[in-house]
Length: 116
Ligand SMILES: [Zn+2]
Image 1 (cartoon, helix red, strand yellow):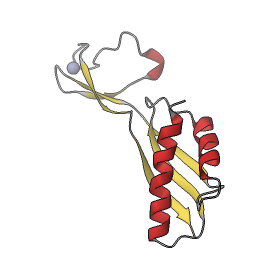
Image 2 (cartoon, helix red, strand yellow; image 1 turned 90 degrees about the vertical axis):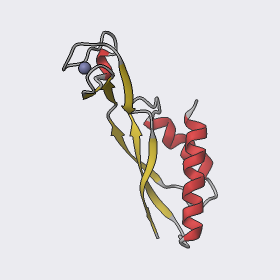
Image 3 (tube, rainbow, N blue to C red; image 1 turned 90 degrees about the horizontal axis):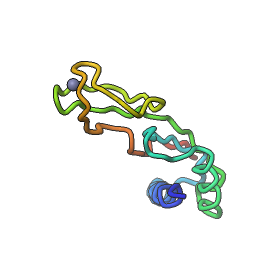
């Protein structure tokens, strides 16, 4: 259910942007979403349709581009993409250690917007 606040904040930005640029209608919105964000495309669109009703962005389609999660090894600094299907027992491909920090993968942001 955490799509709801995310979509609300995205919509707020879109509506603000639209009024600044005198946009009449928003057709689609490009979003970059990290694969670890736990957001689901289907729900994002559903919530968006619900929240955007009556606004300048009503009926706009979300174009979601999934961004892979990248880990950084705390031992050797190697960066590598996380394979989501093998979350258990991940080791650094360079040194074999198991201490990582997350570089990207949980974030989401608006890339572009198609409007008139
Ligand atoms: Zn390493």
